[in-house]
Image (cartoon, rainbow, N blue to C red; front, side):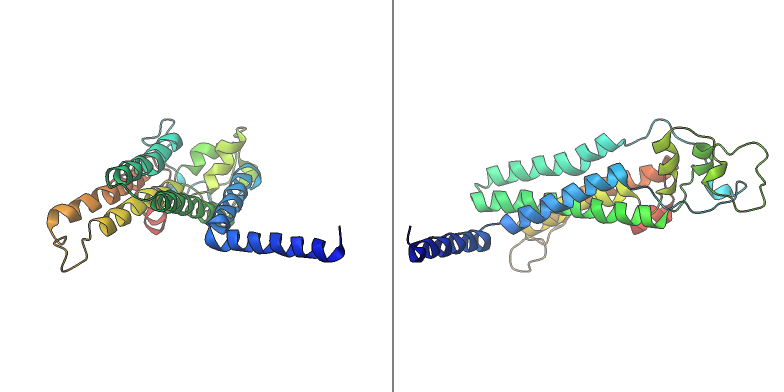
Amino acid sequence: MAPGRSASSGNAAASAFSRFWKRTHAPDYLGFAILLGTWMLMLVFLEPFHRMFFINDLRISYPHAEVERVPVYMNFVYALFVPLGVLIIYNLMTKASPHKHEVTYLSLGISVIMTSFITDLIKNAVGRPRPDLLARCKPAAGTKPDMLVTIDVCTEKAHHLLHDGWRSFPSGHSSFSFAGLGFLSIFLAGQLHIFRHNSGGRDLSRALICLVPLLGAALIAISRCEDYRHDVYDTTLA
């Protein structure tokens, strides 16, 4: 093949790729994949900073709840799959375009993954003890109560149970639930035009529909305080 023809083919391929990159959501999918992969690696390999503590600190002396009110898998159901199902049904009922289907679900995915990534990054960097830390740690007999101690005094052998005791701030359940259900609330508010003066959408019934997902997210956040996994500070700022 002549050098000129080869260069021309290369330029055509580069031009086609450039058009594809600019006219599709390929950059968003790439960013989503990077975020998802990094988040999963973080969950597997990253350990939290272990802040020192007093074993007579009442703020971390709550019992460890073996059964959570909202386990992790149910948080995924409530905050990801329920909103996704509502979005799919709404788009099908309104005969949304393929483009709207794509951007709606992609936006929901980016919302929950980016929130989870940022939340877990902060969790591990801050290393704030959970309210049930001492129940997880099981300090060795003879540990002095009036001096700061480290994780070295803990006798608990279950790795995740122990180290997760330093992932109190911010609450992952809270941030994840508001990322998914909060997205649904904002989506419904936009579709029902509740902020438009001339659309007839500024009525209480439509506003209440948009409020329901936020109330669900708030209840999930409150459950984390009831399980003594977090305090109000952790859940509110999440």
